[in-house]
Length: 276
Image: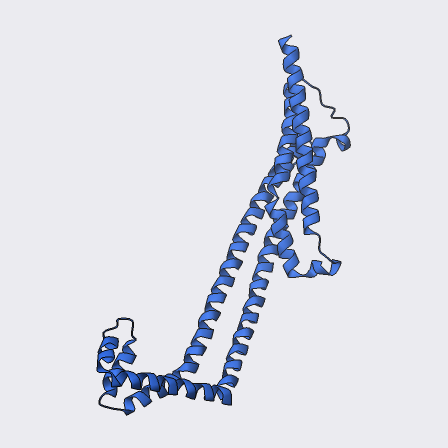
């Protein structure tokens, strides 16, 4: 009685493992295909679509492998419980198709590694070229702005405002001393305030120097933003290459190992001949 119940439980467990395994395999493959479909056929040659599709496929790559493992475990449970498995026709054997799919997926993931690495390299190259172009356009726009009459007018207004503010401060010795003791006041401005008491031209020299440095500061800011964006692009490209590339390689090893070893154990693949 106990042996019968144990055999029935093993049969249910094996059937459950097989069903869940098949569902995992089919659903994962269908999801990967559907999510990776381009909007138009011409998009398949687009590098952005290729990168996104590779990421989608690799991110879901472990699910079919789990399904294959569950399916094979189901057959192992059948074998352990004494259920005979028909070996006469390999074409109707679910194990053969699961192992064949595993081998094909292994080759696909293996091919994805160099393809994805090359795409990320080219994508980074194009992004850096675009970044250089944008920085050049920003500098050209700045040069044109500096030569414009509006810029010169705004610069003179700014110089006049600073001259008035500093002149007012120099007339009030109490406020002047208070500002000189302010730790947040730039060192250059403190020096000008001190020198302007004895040399009225020191203020004009300072304002003229500041006006000349404004374009350099703007160019420096453009260069800083360019370096920061370049760093972000390189970091993103490196992370994508490592994450997707390594995961794809690991999946390829897993799928090929399961598929080829399984097919070999079924006698379909034979690497060499055994001596009698």
